[in-house]
Amino acid sequence: MDMASASDEPDMDFEDDDIFDTESPNELKLIKVNDQVRRLQTIIRDKNTSRSDFVFSADRLIRLVIEEGLNLLPYQPHTVTTPSNIQYDGIKFERGNCGVSIIRSGEAMEQGLRDCCRSIRIGKILIQTDDESNQAKVFYAKLPKDIAQRNVLLMYPILSSGNTALKAIEVLEEHGVREKKVILMTLFTTPIGISTVVSKYPGIRILSTEVHQVAPVHFVQKYFGTD
Image (cartoon, rainbow, N blue to C red; front, side, top):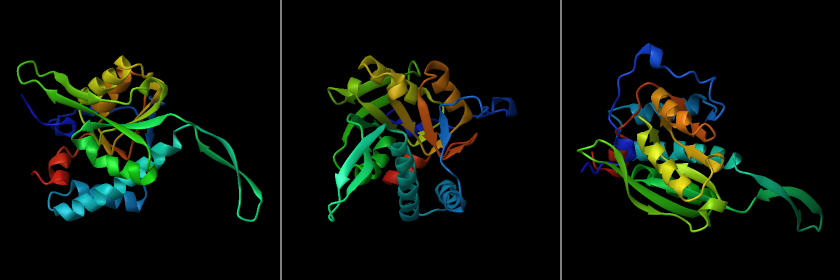
């Protein structure tokens, strides 16, 4: 049994014709890429980057994705009273949000989510590839009991082939979560990974920093120091 987690998916070869038409899926959203974001992407992809610099840069990029993911959640009007007794018309989250990480790579994003939402509940799904069938199989899933009533931030840094993410979404679906309530948050995606997911779940939203033919599949080993 291959004990590698989702972000350990193998490198895949792409032809030019395989490049995904990013104008096609309305569900795909890329964060604004400025020089700062591009620098973080470069550090993460550089094979000579030290682990400390890698983790530092990955955490910064994760935080940017988390913040943007929170912007995609539903809000509702909320009026508060200021210290000077003035009414302020603001907003607050609608009730019923949670995070779900795909073990192990997705766990790298958990702290970033907690830093933004201290009390948010986080579930976990462990998916591994069976050596004989080469199929993704679910070995563990611990989710909030009322997850069917929640919006789900699905955390998975590297979307390569898309097969593991697809299996995770199937698990959520089996627990009553509608695809339109799932936001798949990644750092790096490939064209085929996006195609794999949206072809079966066209209503799901995918948030990332980059779509590129080659994904940094060394992410989980480098981040957790097992390379």
